[in-house]
Length: 518
Image (tube, rainbow, N blue to C red; front, side, top):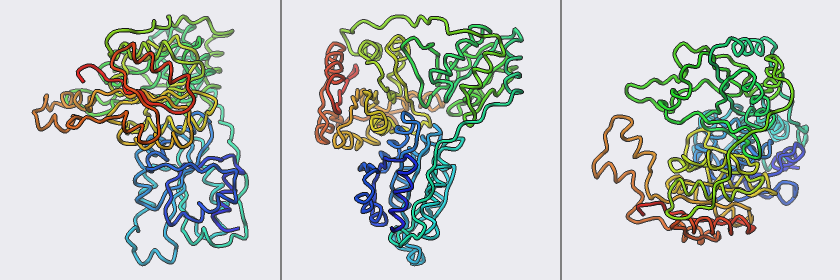
């Protein structure tokens, strides 16, 4: 077999059976090898940012890597924003990038670029294969690196001539996900001592701490010690509803986050980083740890976070099962004007059991946490790295990774246009993704930030750079043009009706929810 087939067979032997692809000439040997390795599902994406974001979404729900197949440095460059988000989510991704043939690189052809420089900015592991015989073992090393711990993006660059050259070694060894190490007893005791001190304390939860087992243990710790439970601002995959403890997320705005943590003297980190402001603002702090507060690291994402929380519960005397959780009631079916509040009520009223919610609402989702707290059990995926345009690709990958679950993508209109090509892939693959696209026809988050950075409200020329009208984007026409059934909702009743029908219908769909003023 040639190097390309050795690559694909190494992937499938290790359980990597999906490849989100936007290939070019240098990757044609890998494309051809798909017919010889039918175990690998190749999925075409019309933009590299869709492929990389989909691989992130797949990993978040499946717990194992998907592969990408990108074309040279420019293709990698097109996918970097969502590789950045995957890096911040610590999602395992095997990122395969084709390159010019080894003997061709010295000619500085038009597509020649610094692939290594681009890749290293978003990868926890990087390698360029040197011989066809190395491709299989290198692919195995990439999978191993993607799993970590900590997990992350592993980029393997494959020169074209290695793909077509015979590999005498063939596939690399099969790789399995390694167990996470338990935390040291000293870390558990340090956190327990802080929580037993009688001083105000909080547990900041992230990663596996926001899965059901971690949440259960954290709830026992909080109930026993009085510690406040707070989730990181943008969780990778947060389990919610169905009787799970409703944990408040740390606010995006630094002032609000400081208010949430006001008075806390011990901040225990379980799979989360110490909080910092998203941006610097005149006169406001960057470090959001309250003055006089001591930070204690119970467990990092490279460790068994859920196990550490179990150990912590034992150390503080929080034995026994979890107490019943009262998360309120499911909202009534909304009527009247379509506002962020009635939008959230429609989602909370109709959210099905086992749904995967992808949230890139940006400014319009403020009421969603409360409205969905009492919904049936579901998972919530967010924009971990802050690079907008991740919602539609995340939903695409999540639907591939969890084909038995309905994916609900809650998507702002401005960020949707970064990766709108995701809809085509959803249609082609028949994916069960329902997208509610919130149309306020502006970059509303930037209108808000314009004032926060001290630049004022802005005049006509400034506001023109934040406005999405003239012409208005017709998302119904765009979606239908990509093969996705679409409709418009202009009031809350229409949204509830359209959402109920879409959630009950197999395949993708899009609902353009037009917010007030438009």
